[in-house]
Length: 361
Image (cartoon, rainbow, N blue to C red):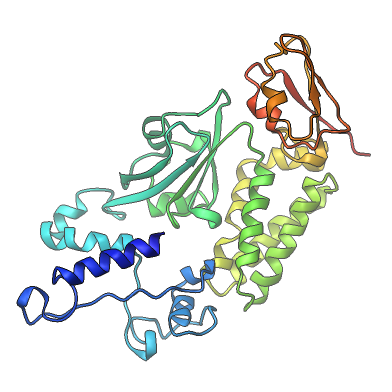
């Protein structure tokens, strides 16, 4: 849809004489051409993007030479995303000094974020650099969407870091996020609450980055897979104490040894989660328990009779008919039919569904 709308906008600009030859009757000519890339995450790396534009396989290339020296078809090329280019008219019209008054000394201007997750107000938000995570979550986002408390926010997209709620006074700028182990990245902000399992979150992001690795360099190609294997092992209740050391060691190796930004940043979710939420990993490994009751192999659901009002909301969402009972009477949950989808747990308004840890010998 985005590509379709861009083509329409470019056609309209040409019809109005704002693009193409002799713009608005002047000697100035300028045009924009859209090239649909391979759709790979690694194409966010500038040299891989150039390869894709030239019709080659989308893999990063060692630098120097840098694209500004030798880029598309060997010509000097300036590579910036649309958000950066959109600031150029403002800087030309208002002046660099006026533009720099917004934001911080080293991170000027504004930034657009995609605010999603366990929060009341989701969507795209444009904020000045230097705003705190707390302001974004509590003021713009409106706070948690449910009864559970917010416990973390993940910044920067799949390769960003997970920052705990006690660090929400952190300002949004490149330097502060980097010091916290995260990044600005693509401008993604994912808000998580107490019902979110950090081990599962890290596994989810690592699954994506491992699949999107171009496979050119060994640390990224093999290292991300090995980290994913360890996380899968932990989530299934088969983790061992030494696994956390191996996971952290692998993350540092991949970060230092990868050729491009994909491999260098892929370990960020792992490292920040181990840094700020190590206790959750230890719960999974040592106690064989998922505190957030997310990991299916480590939890079993049941109805708490004294809390159940018989409203039948859980009955209406259960895909396997595991929950039964007459209206206004406590219901029963059949563990044999339960597929642990969490639908009943999330929809219950009376905390009548409990997720108990399964003891794994």
